[in-house]
Amino acid sequence: MSAIFMTDKGRVRQNNEDNGGIFVNKDGQRLAIVADGMGGHRAGDVASEMTVATLQSMWEQTVRIETADEAENWLRTHIKSVNSILFEHARTNEECDGMGTTIEAVIATGLFTTVAHVGDSRSYIANPDGFQQLTEDHTLVNELVRTGQISAEDAEHHPRKNVILRALGTEQDVKIDVKTIMFEEGDYLLLCSDGLSGKVTKEEIRGVLDSEDSLENKASKLITMANENGGEDNITLVILEFEDDRERG
Image 1 (cartoon, rainbow, N blue to C red):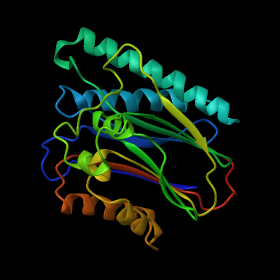
Image 2: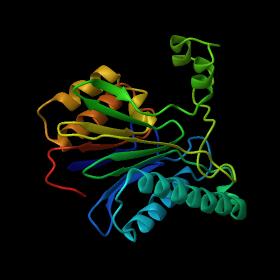
Image 3: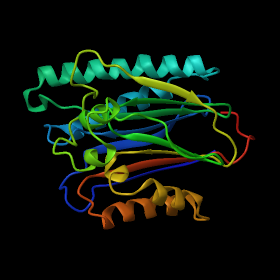
Image 4: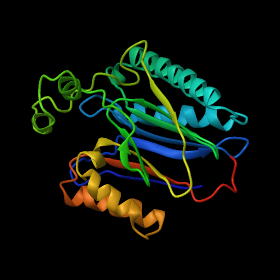
């Protein structure tokens, strides 16, 4: 399995409130994270940085994950712990009042991949069956689309398009979407903040992933495309490629 993490502040923002990375536990298994500090909120960069640093520390002390149930329980338990840490930090530090972050966190093993999701960052899988979004945006407009109140086309230009209904650190409790998928030879998994998914179409993303470029060049091309299409937001992504089954970790 190969993986790359890349982030860019974009063409408009002065600071990068996104964070993320790819981390290895004691048995060589990977945890990949993308966290988008909430735009318009104070200390969004603090929220995303604390989230990634805390999960990294927890993961590096973790022994081998053997089953999908173990992976799902690990993600739920530790992301809930991070939520509590963020909520308490915001409550006791006035300058961080209202901070929050999205989270895409993936445990990738040689047998399966487990995805945890809160907010409007996304996870996608590209495989012989096509290119599929694995997560459901926790946003006002997506809820309006889901309940038939507006069309998907209306959602693209809705004035409250950026209103997030679920994030880490903003409430004492958080609901986390978790699912496990099979991740097989030749598959790609993409985690990204909305700075990418909001600027590059699914067809364009699939085209880049299907190219013969290296992972680093694929990641760089996607960020360049988002910037060329406006780059109004920070842009962060992780690409995981399942190359063969020699690694069982």
